[in-house]
Length: 220
Image (cartoon, rainbow, N blue to C red; front, side, top):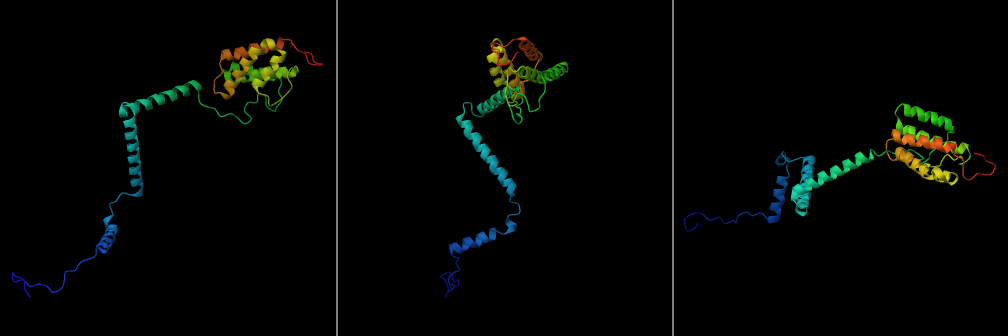
């Protein structure tokens, strides 16, 4: 049988492949390693995804921030400046030691020992240590005079409050001394000559002051 143009006409229908089978065959073919030799690695794909996320984040923030991208930059710079200012003002945060808050430790030392230590630190310009030692000398002196009960775990604030009962004329100065001790010991503040002089003068004045209230069987 021939076509009107004289060409033979096949008696068998053309070969066709079902759509699903064709798709599966294409997928198998494209999954071969030879087609993926130049694909980006896992790390590169993860990095690209992260950069795309950052870009989307900044784009969204820029759209919601007055001034767009420039506004974001200004806000970041202002925030960094504020953090730097706080760091400079407050100093490096210091980790409080175990049992933080205690003024005197378990080891028993005399007020004279603490005063000698304080003067040595002051002579060497170690004002923070000098302030600490002088405050300990003051409180230890009150314990030696039995104006305070010996208690290793007592804090500077507690010592000042308890001492103010029998030394009301020094109550305000004792509170100030306790705050100075806490500042240099736990607040990261550095001691200075003026602070040490205040503690030294208070220690001397308290040593010479008779208590307003005497305890039974105790003489100051």
